[in-house]
Length: 407
Image 1 (cartoon, rainbow, N blue to C red):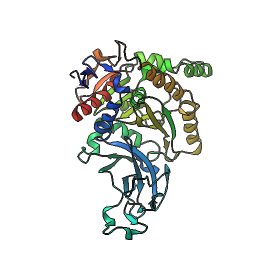
Image 2 (image 1 turned 90 degrees about the vertical axis):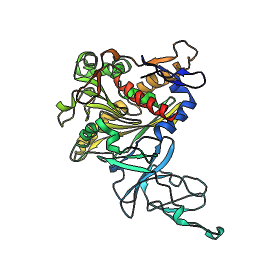
Image 3 (image 1 turned 30 degrees about the horizontal axis):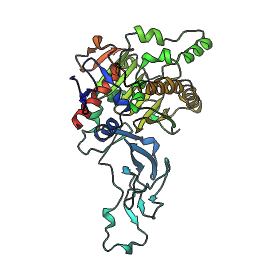
Image 4 (image 1 turned 60 degrees about the vertical axis):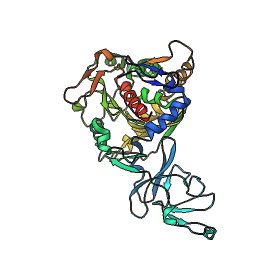
């Protein structure tokens, strides 16, 4: 990787020895370029099919900052992803996050659209000399594909097919799709986190076991008091060869708590009840942690929304579902031990510290484990130890490629 420059001062954003300029977390012009070069040119997760199981079901979502409606047509059952924008004066036509509707009506001037997006009603249409309703329906996003029930959309009509884009990450999604009796359901909806900081901080944190025994020490101390045993986190992050971070290519990355080929179908338990024996990032904004799906939505250079959807196995009884939800609440919930730690230490304090931009050390260091990365001869993926920053470099490497290509 060569040194990359940006802006009139030609300051390096990422160097060969993985010094990363903090400008990528705080510069509004870089954020604007990310929207155009990353979120508008890749596949972005928008929904799981279990969120819209019936004709007319819908949810609202975002492609970068662009609002969309994801629905199952009331007439055909087809999954649509349409811009949430009236063709008249631009008002959003759908306000609720989820629901069921046979049509969408703009509250501003009453323009009405079918669930497939066709314009069906214009009040007082005699105000137009010539008017073609067929050309004024809701605009559909150029590409929509589903893999194992996970629905992705892209603003780039020439984006590669979704299976090719997912690449080595497919086997991990395949594993998730086998949870329970027919895969997971996202029927409990999501709870949302909002923090004042850049979206990439959450992506980096998701696949960072290095921080766990420090940032979440209070939680580990509580577990030790309850069980009488020390957590395996410190020992395994340092020494267990089966705990490893992997660069899967295309910006995707995974941290395995045991090799996937050795994983059984049952849940594993490390600190809390878990379903998935790995943390997985699908570039740029989708992740899986423990027993939930995590969706990161950038709102501005220093504001991020995070949606957390508990994964409930189909066919699971009420007791199992309740346990998953309670475990999720204990660690990831609004009053839980985990997310509050991450927001305070990993996002707020980092954002505040990065304001020290006049410092000669105005960079973050992503070189941990670089000297001991190995490349798998069969798959070509990069593999490192659990505490190494292989997964972070994976997403930044792809981020950099897209930013350079857009430049």
